[in-house]
Each structure stands twice: as structure tokens, then as C-alpha cells.
Length: 522
Image 1 (cartoon, rainbow, N blue to C red):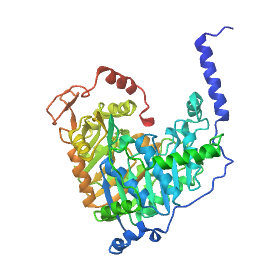
Image 2 (image 1 turned 90 degrees about the horizontal axis):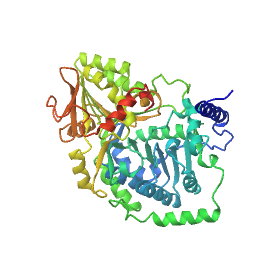
Image 3 (image 1 turned 45 degrees about the vertical axis):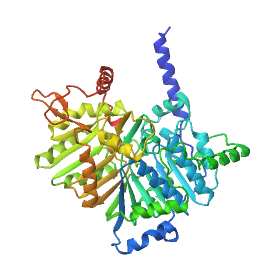
Image 4 (image 1 turned 120 degrees about the vertical axis):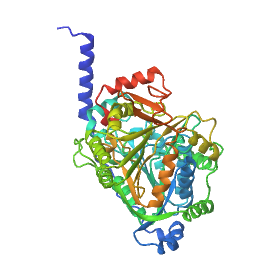
């Protein structure tokens, strides 16, 4: 029997996937030494710095400072690196090998040289053939790098066929973003490590938000890190690669990067360098911190049932509880905004009892991922009918451009996008972290969020978000009498009858994606 060529190709593809299914499993026989976070901050300068302020507070209170600008977020991370004496723990979904990512890695290398233990935990989805350079960094005696939920096949088409073969496991990604220095200070929020998150990219920068924390909450952030670090889904980089670097090459690489770590010419601004500058920077921030009660919530690093893609994770459950307690207002800022039927019904119930829901999310023009916008676009009319007031971030947001101009930027700004993930309830409670208001964060990704009970901090974020609800920064979206979507600089003042500032091809591509029920996976 002679098969058509297309059928041959299909059978071949199936056989390849079956073959990969049989051989793509995570390595298990590895030397995974458990380790715990540094827990004696009082023996370090960073820890001693906070003692006088903490003594005047209740034992339940921690100090917080909102990091709204990319420049400040980068500078504070570098200040902690420079100030650390014992330990640095970094957990990220993305760590780019660009200017910001390389410089931060080099400063961590310098910290390791002076005896600081450095642990770096990265999700595997964005490693992208960088095993060799990561292994070189991890070869330092004071640096350990682990990869969370790794692909068994590391390169090429086989890697992505392996994704199909182990869809349930490999679709669960560590989206968490935390940073801890000496067990004394921590950062939680929405930023990954890369130029576009720190106002350094000449073409695209993200509006984002982190929160710097000190006090007892830092122990909870460290517990989150330890849970993922010691998870059976986290693997030392050396367990995932076959060839280790030659000693002579390793020594040369380390020497070159230690020298390069002192070069700031490629940066748009000068971060602190050295112990004294780092301490001075943190000391100035410490005087501006707001003290409040808070709790950290994080998803367990290994789900009890990896095939269960339909149950809320812990962070999503906590969000649901906070929303149910709202009395007057829920103010949302989320890069991606996709609600399922259950979430839509709850939104309608809130609106029926007089709770105002306002949301700022990306427009099609500012969204970096068409797939994510397709899920939002599919549910946009339903959200408006349920009483949610929608605002879409403009890629030419004036306030963001002014902010970049005041802090320094690399070249002319071409575009901006929204990457922040924050919610404020009744102007009293702040929910901030890595959690996007979409189905992937609710059901699939692993996330970390801080819930801070502070009217002062909540109002700071409200003021910031409301700035971006203004006409020069976002478009209002509504339904006209015929039930059609309309956009304008003010509610009811029509300016666009389709997604603003987009061409027909971009709208067509989203229109095709909307036809597929894949919004949970984007």
C-alpha cells in the first residue's frame, strides 16, 4: 500500500514523539545537596542596620518600600549585592544575557569572590541554549545555580517535541521572582532580570512594580526560596550538561568577567559599587520604609497532581478570598487580564453589591504577546457587561516617557509595555507579586505574592495606577448601544472602533488566535 506524503510525515512525527516520550524524563540519580537560607541577619551589617527600627515596631510588622521605576529597581538590587556579607539568593523566571543581566551576574561573581554564598534558581523555559555560560558561573566555589523543571532534551526541535510528550509537567513553570540578601532584605514583584525591566532597552521598556522588604517577612521570602531550591524539580546545572569546561578556560572566563564587572560604561546610569556605597543606598531607603503587617503566599513547587490543570493554586485561592472581602473598590493593574466563567460571575456579584472594579491592562498595541491578548480580547465584552471598567495601556504613555526621561534612558524610547501585577482592595490592602490576572497564573504557573495590610502603601499604588488611567496614558474601553467595542481618551468619547494604533494584520492575527480555546495556556 502506498501512503500519501502528508500521511508519511504525520506518521513520522508521531513516531518521533513516541520515541521522545520514552526517553525524555528528568535525570534522577544526581547529587542534589539540600541547603537552607542564611538565618542570622543580625550578624551582618544589613541586619544590624534594621535592628533599631524594628525594635520600635510590633513583632508582626515589616518594612516596605515600593520600587516603581526600573532604574530604582536595578539600583536597589545592586545595592543589596554590594552590601551582602553572607548570602544572596535570586529566583527568576527570566534572566537575560543582555546589559543588565550580564552586569548583575558579574557583580554576583564579585560577591562570591569576597566569600558570599550565591544561589541562583532559574526556570528552564527561557534558558535558551545558555547551559554553558550558566555552568561556567556555577563553577565558582561560592556559586550554585539550579534549573527548575528542566527539559530532558536541551536543544533544537527535539526539545519542543519533548514539551509535547511531557505537556502536563513542562507546562508548569516557575514564574516566581524573589531576591534576598543576608536574610535581612528581600525583593518581591513582577520584574525579571533584563534591560527592558530596568529602563535600559532602547526599543521597549516595561512599566513594572516591585516591593523592597525588611523585617520578619524576609524569613517567609527565604522559606519560599528554600522550598523551590530543595524541590525534586530543581536540578544543579551540572546535572543537565555532559561536557564540563576545561580548567584553563574556566579560569580565563572567571578572570575576564571579574574585570568586566567594574565597567559601567554600557549602563544608562551608575549603580552603587562597593560595600560603602551599597550600605549608604540601603540606609537612605530604610528611612522611607512604611511598616505594616503582611504575609507571603507562594505555590508549592511540586503539585500533588501534575495532571490536574483545573484546580486553583494557593496564590489564586488567596486572591479569591481577598476579592470576596472587598466592600467598595478593587483596582487592578495586570499585564495580562483573562477571566474564566467563574471569575466573571464573581465580578458580576461584586458589581451587583456596589463594588467598583477598575482594571488597567495592555492594549493590543502595547502587548508583547499576541497570544495573551487573544484571551483578553475574547472575554473583553463579557468583562464590560459584568461591570468591570477597562483601561488599556498606551504604547506612547506620556507619564512613562516622562519618567524615563527624568531618570535616564538608553537612546530614544520607541515603545512601552505594561508588565506590573498589583491589586489594591478598598485602598487598604495591597496584593503584589508575580501573579498575572489570567488563567495561566491561576491554574498552571507557580507564583509568589505579598499581601500587605497598609492603607499608606495601598494609596501609593492607587495614586500610581490612577496616573495611568488618565487619557494621555491609556484608552478607556466601553460598549456602545449596539454592543460594539469602542475606545477613546475618555469614557463615551469615541475615537476608535477597533484596537487603537494597530494595523489590520495584527488584528487579523489576534482574530485567528481567538478561535482556539487556548487562553489557559498563554
